[in-house]
Image 1 (tube, rainbow, N blue to C red):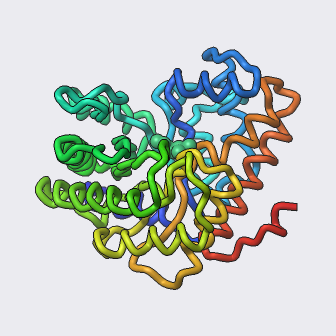
Image 2 (cartoon, protein in one colour; image 1 turned 180 degrees about the vertical axis):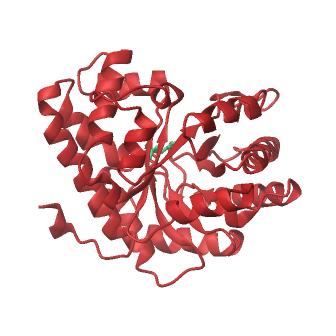
Length: 337
Ligand code: 13P
């Protein structure tokens, strides 16, 4: 298959009605935090057990089109001794891989951060592709305050994100482009809209500068919401503000926008996605690429005990099914029962 055909086929498999992406790519420190919340100490065995349980949930592929894995998981075998990428394929799910190396402070821009990981990326992608990965993820992070993010942070992060995306596409790997505007803080929804618009505008300028094919990428943004310290907006307000910004800056050639959950509760993330899809037809498929909002209930159900595996599988299937419904605006809270 040519590189173009590979990219087109992966996009077709990822962007399907009723489906979204599961982000199970927590780095070691992040998964340790999630496990600690349910009283489990993180170890390679425990991570393998938990991820093996949720990824083999029967029927997961009905609602999940792709799973983003952490490097360690890509090379692991399930509890049934099947390579994880192979397990996903047997569920009809496309395996993907987080490829950024995390973030550090951006020098001479106090309060801002920059994502690392471009050095040697092509060599790593080759290894990941041989292991079964068909798409990748890179996350940029933007903090909001009255003065943050600086122009310098917006430009520098957009540049690395675009270079990552171009490298992925040159190797037949679909890039998920993730500029996350953080929910932390006491900013208004208007301030979040202003920052989101500036960040996305810069990201699409950089993608164009680097010749990234918009039809062969997926955008993974945050929704436009007030800061975490402020009273919550209604799902209708979030949907309206989010779509207003996106219609200004996201080109129609982008096939799919798969939101991150970013600290929203599982129910909130489903309600907000549902409201977004109830605003009528848009140029792009509007779906999810949730980490916490899909996994939190499953982690609680599992709590480090393999006997709870079936309950954990039921919990992740439930969130996947409900978000699958929100993908077409047909979710209602009665479905939670
Ligand atoms: P959350 O949905 O928990 O924000 O995670 C999504 C993700 O992949 C962040 O990079």
